[in-house]
Image 1 (tube, one colour):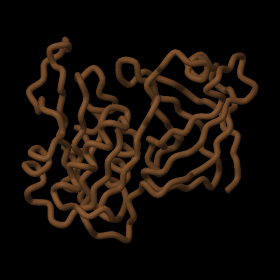
Image 2 (cartoon, one colour; image 1 turned 90 degrees about the horizontal axis):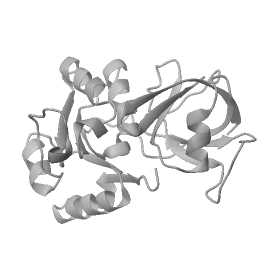
Image 3 (cartoon, one colour; image 1 turned 30 degrees about the vertical axis):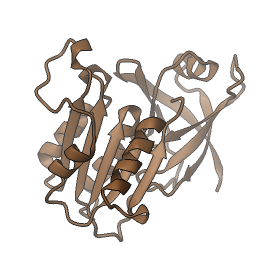
Image 4 (tube, helix red, strand yellow; image 1 turned 180 degrees about the vertical axis):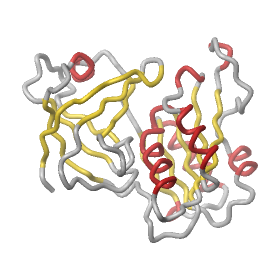
Length: 240
């Protein structure tokens, strides 16, 4: 696949400590929601042992004008350069890649299990399913410590309110540290929650994305519940 050079168009904070970066979309660039790309800094002003390449899920939907990624901001050279990068700066993009994706040919409903910044591929899936001709039935369970940490929460709530094929169950597991009100779920995503909210979902596929420990635990939970390995897609986000 070709390697593209794309310009940074804008950037914004989408949750506390989380930023979204919007890049121009190359002509003819096509991807399936859930796929990722490698982004490489070009002649950065600083670097460190972690290098100048990062892999990010494409958080934008295929119909959107720009390519968008989102990431937790850590104090690394890559993240510092990305955050301070002037608009119009070029970056190298290698992609799309990956099989963590919804397929239009599959009629089966999907249950999406997201922790933290693992929401990025699911934002793409949710927005695409709301505008494309195929009507995937999607149930998204989205876990964060606090509402302040939940990137794209308001946007996903709006999608759920307007698309009968998309259901959102958001949960906040550390509300004692929040300054916001929350009347939704507060427990961790576990077998009991999955069983309760998906009782009417027949023969689903499962997609799991988030921190490695959460992904490993949920894969084990699903396997213990009798879900076949072939029905589970998983992607962990280490280091952010």
